[in-house]
Image (cartoon, rainbow, N blue to C red):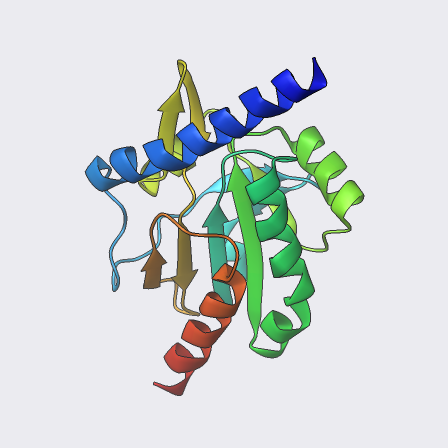
Length: 180
């Protein structure tokens, strides 16, 4: 029974990853140079967080499908592992998914995450950023990342992220962008 549930979970995660390639290709993502769409979402700390709260800092805004799943956990752990490097670069990490603030709080506690996860329960912000996928009639956030510069403009877009080396890739790109 446990093996069957595990197999179904792996299949679902694989389908979510594959479907993000298809859906994201047709969704309209903000482009480099455009002003990043502002938002106000509830965080894992139960406070409302707006993009404008971080004006003057670099922002790594990453969208991901679901707390407590394997790929999303690896991605979050890698951002946490590199958090000191992001802080040295004057950058904050904000994760967004359609999970609730309470689920984010539990995920942060379990994984010892010290950055904000934001609850986009109606998927409106994910949609605004061209980062929505649908699976079995449910909406999820697609795995896309945006670097936003201190002036609030999109500086880099990473569509259809592969989690294993993503944090290192973002840090390297951030370093290059900050040289300009």
